[in-house]
Length: 103
Image (cartoon, rainbow, N blue to C red; front, side, top):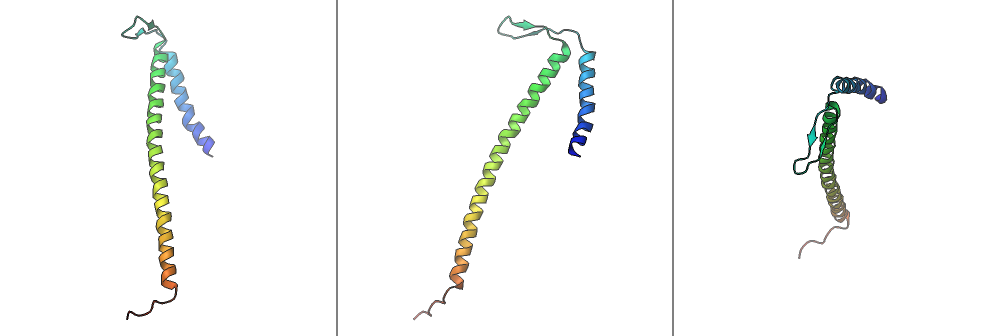
């Protein structure tokens, strides 16, 4: 089921990428400013590479944020276990023998 849904979403997107690549074959000159390095890839390749780089940068930022959230969750779970242990200890004290009345 999940694979079928992925295919239903991926197929139209892949079709759009192929149509975009076929519609933009003209070369574009790209240069690196401080140097004289220039390349002339097709416009579609230049745009698709830029989009892929932006996607990967966004995924990296999301992954770093998820790591921080997981670290916070682990710390909260550890604190919860400590507090539950303290509660159990206090319940055991209350269930123990009664304290003698103060003299």
